[in-house]
Length: 194
Image (tube, rainbow, N blue to C red; front, side, top):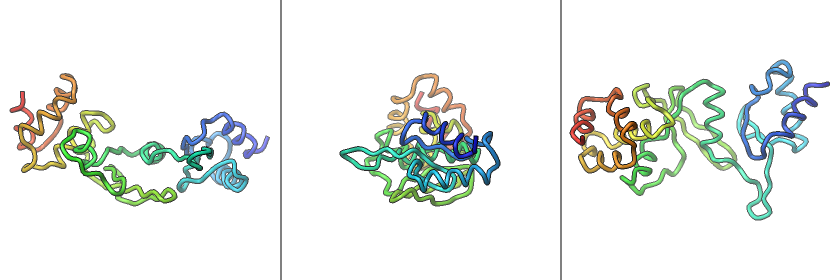
């Protein structure tokens, strides 16, 4: 059975509009053979290419047309493929804790990898390199709270902001936040809210 046929057989059982990377098909052949098979499947309309090495089965809605996954789901695939840690940007974290109503124009995430900009159709995804301190507990509410505090900065972190963040965290999560590596001014603000 050819590489294309084996890949096509597996893809038929994958959910539509669910992103995946070519690395998920390593066992079917060499990287070049898998890439060629993916290109043929894109040409045949079986797959849609989202970014270099990232694909999905197209999903067509009678109401909305071509349905795409959120940029965060595509980012998870890219992060897994590149073995890098990603975290929501501080501006979005502040909004999720109801400390601001401003929304980001372009989706921006923190990463331990290099800073770069990715395009998915009309969507733009920005990855901003940050230190590992801001990536502690990435993908959890604790990590979200930490980047929100960093984003607010020394002038913006007060007892009111910490109280709002604390109200959205469980006691275990808040204890984890207190144990994070952070600047002294932030540690004092968090500990004073006890």
